[in-house]
Amino acid sequence: MSRMMMGTSPHAEPFWKATEDKKLVLQYSPETARYYHYPREPIVVSPKTGAVEWREAKGLGEIYAFSVMRKPGNPSMGARVPYVVAIVQLEEGVRMMTNVVNCPLENVKVGMKVKLAWEELPKGRHFPVFEPA
Amino acid sequence: MAYDSTYLRGKAAIVGAADEVSPTGELHLTERELEVKVIHAALEDAGLKLSDVDGLFCTGMMMPSLELAEHLGIRPRYTDSTMTGGSSFEVHVEHAAAAIALGLCEVAVSVYAQTPRSKGGLTGGMAAMMSAFDRKNPPPFLEWEMPAGLMLPAGAYALAASRHQHLYGTTSEQLAQIAVSTRQWAQMNPRARYQEAMSIADVLNSPLVCDPLHRYDCCLVTDGAGAVVITSAERARHLKKKPVYVMGVGTHHDHAMMISEMPELTVTPGAVSAPKAFNMAGVAPKDIDLVMTYDSFTITVLMSLEDMGFCPKGEGGRFVEDGKLGPGGSLPTNTNGGGLSYTHPGMYGMFLLVEATRQLRGECGPRQVPDAKLAVAHGVGGVLSACSTVVLGTEETL
Image (cartoon, each protein chain N blue to C red):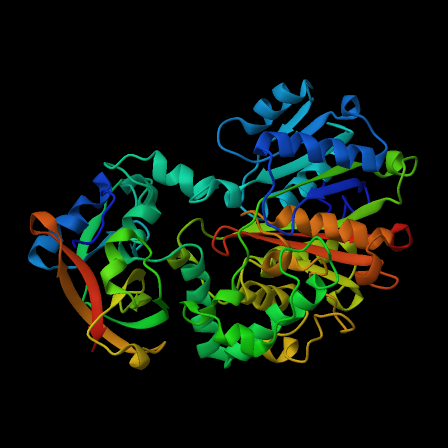
């Protein structure tokens, strides 16, 4: 069963488009000189100019927090139970909600180094997940 | 006017309180009927009439305080539909105290009713989000957290618990002790949903919901309703019951529905709201006789106790493990049996205020905290998103 998505927002289109090439891009504001994730409307991150850049992330980070879901958080995840939901802190300084895959449950730890992996979504796009580095 | 962080101290008081719960968890009335019922009960408790009410506070979707006033047939001159999830009603007390102090209203009612047990499935804010959103521009949670399969709300709190365990060595046994102490209070409350004895082993042997949280680390899902009446300190002195003064208030939020937006998962907004409230009241945690703190999950209690200053950050597990939160302990906490064992209709903060009021009046029978003079009601809304702290006191604490 394909992972449930409830739509994507127009200001995040560059993020989702880049997943077609398995690239993780992060929104960057030249005005504030920092990354943002989740992506905001350009005026939110750069109120004066509306300028945003999309910079490719290295795809490296560590587990900031995690939990094993014993019941599915949405209907599409039923067959995966139990699975790991994690907040991963990327080297670029932002955090993202994701899954840790290809790792026995008992080995998952806060602070563990992880690297980007990809899972197929419909229409040639991909969903970023992480696995042990 | 220069800002005075203690201006609201003792200006207003809770003078009426009522709640509607059932040991079955089910109430056979609609949410509107329950709202009206508890409003009348709280006014009766205060010795006031509906026609006295000139400030109306509630939560909901679309102009809720307008809808409620229309049903009640009142036309309040102050209206407030502030919605911060489970902490909404502590925020209402803060806003009511400010409005009363400025003369914008004199008799305020805050009310809550929700019946998730009877209705089944999603209710409240989550149901609203899932039923009406634009797939071409969805709310951030649905785009950035839901696809990872995060179960709400338990998953969000479990993430915080995982980090607290990692940073501070907090154990599942220590978390379980919070549920056990709370259950001991519920055993003294004939209106509580769960009144059977429970041990730490019972909690640890209950099914994992989201690691490290077990079934009995998680709150109930029940129907429930409650209301409080707030008025000026002057008027409060001429009413039916002993006034419970609003001594200090503070509110803070640092993210909304996405737990991954929280600056640090082990430090809640209570670390800001509580010191504001204590400072206004001119008291410290050591002065508090009764703690009513939001217990959506055991980890919520543990981190809130730290953030309010009852123990240092990271010490929460060791602080609670001797059972001091329970009956006979040095820090009576959640004496009605809490959201863990008494009732939890989704936004539990109202019941913190109702129980604190009853305790400070000495109305709690077998579970009465002897000589309780100062209480704190600490609400936590969203996913550790919005905290609001209310310090309440008897006449002699003024």
